[in-house]
Amino acid sequence: MRVHQGAFSLSADLTDAQIKKQVEYCIKNRFAIGIEWTDDPHPRNSYWEMWGLPLFDIPDAATIMYEIAEARKAHPNVYIKINAFDNTRGVESTGLSFIIQRPSFEPGFYLVRQEAAGRTIRYTLQSYAVQGSAEGARY
Amino acid sequence: MSNVEQRTRIKSERYESGVIPYKKMGYWDADYTVKETDVLTLFRITPQPGVDPVEAAAAVAGESSTATWTVVWTDLLTACDIYRAKAYFVEQVPNSANEFFAFIAYECDLFEEGSIANLTASIIGNVFGFKAVKALRLEDMRLPYGYLKTFLGPATGVIVERERLDVFGRPLLGATVKPKLGLSGKNYGRVVYEGLRGGLDFLKDDENINSQPFMRWRERFLYVMEGVNKAGAKTGCVKGSYLNVTAATMEEMYERAIFAKEVGSVIIMIDLIIGYTAIQSIAIWSRKNDMILHLHRAGHSTYTRQKSHGINFRVICKWMRMSGVDHIHAGTVVGKLEGDPNTVKGFYDTLLLSSLKENRNIGIFFDMDWASLRKCLPVASGGIHCGQMHQLVQLLGEDVVLQFGGGTIGHPDGIQAGATANRVALEAMILAKNEGRNYVEEGPEILKVASKECRPLQVALDLWKAITFNYASTDTLDYEATPVKGLA
Image (cartoon, rainbow over all chains, first blue to last red):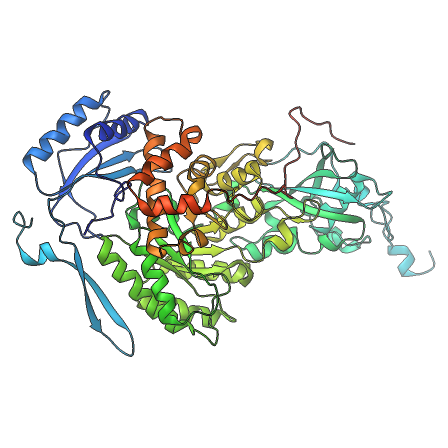
């Protein structure tokens, strides 16, 4: 399966040239650019691991592309995304978020159905990879 | 003096019993200095033939505040000069001989804190049936900062909703289940699953899906949540489907809302026709229960569409943001329903900005600070399709839910294909916009290139390429670049 999270997940994986243009867009909007990675892409996993601090006030995309390359080198087979932070008053949240690397195989999720009272079913979403292996050995 | 009645009769000319013009009763004050704490209104007045526009404005001020048709001595027991609303400026509506814009100021103490019901009982209570005006429209309002602070506003709002769904930097995508009526619960859930599985963030009950003989509400909620959860597992995303809890009584609405929470929905829905008090009540319930609240503006066109009479939708936008709904339908411009581009832009700004600046080009007549009330997410729904994606992104921006009902479910290759077509079209357009391309001009080309890698998009573009709804809007703006002179 393909995880649909992020702004561009149903399109083909972005090339580095495309990623750079989105990074430039973030810089133009004065967003701080965070690089985050995980091997637990549960949709309610809000906190992926941070690749250092978000990059504030970086004038050129090259610095960010360098960090992206370093993050990929250190974590070649996990999910990596860009989280761009917009500190404009009234926003003060993420302005753009998109996946820039996926593991070679995305095993996806399954539903655990617990039959509750009456016809109610309690659903829990579990990740095959997380269920099967420990952190660092999932893909 | 012969008798006590004669001796104690009021001598002041102003309070002598009888009927005097509203203007003379103190409801017109051309020199009035607006206070920061005043509630301001702008009415479009069409006076009856022969009625002086300023007198009509004063009458509207009177009837929407303290006045009745005749002089009453009991006024003198109150600080009546304060409580009287004052019409302070009247101007002719550009390009219209018999319509006038009247600006009226109201003392804030005329209105109960935190109550849309009370605010509206004054402002639109009696005055719309008033015989001296042929037609009357409430065009805009300025709610003062202090009064806004007595309202909670949206509990979730745009920013937090995005954080909960983990969707940033693009419009949200939705679709309304079709056919609106007649599906069984199980078949209904199928549509929800397919749409979400294909790439939408939300599906939605329609305004008139409540609990009919063909599908009772519990049945719907259970199957819809199966679809929502299954699609979540298949896509790794937080998904939602607006469960419409509109019902005959508040008790019944609470029961449905509580069940929606029990089965794990992130969002519920209400219709505008439930009324202001019910909306504020369910908004408070939603706040207490971490629930996003979607409002379908069912019924609004009965009073918002005609230019001369009723309430402009921008006022409804303000009341609903104050009431605390997180979503509200606010027009598509290019779709099948009414919507002039600049007028709709004004609605979106009203819902999304932290403070408003007077700009008659988009129908905003007052500066207004929203006092940190959260942003209400506009929803664009009705006759839109993926071939219009460049126009939608340009006209409506990123903070919007684009809802393609027919444009998803009507796809020849199925609902999933329809959903995917919409999502891929949207992603291509946002990518191009962020890259700094002239995406509006190049829109059709951008879609064509994207469709080469996405057959569902190709099929959709072929099917709907010629569909447009080019009718003249009814509710358009009346403005002139140069300031207009007031009447005295």
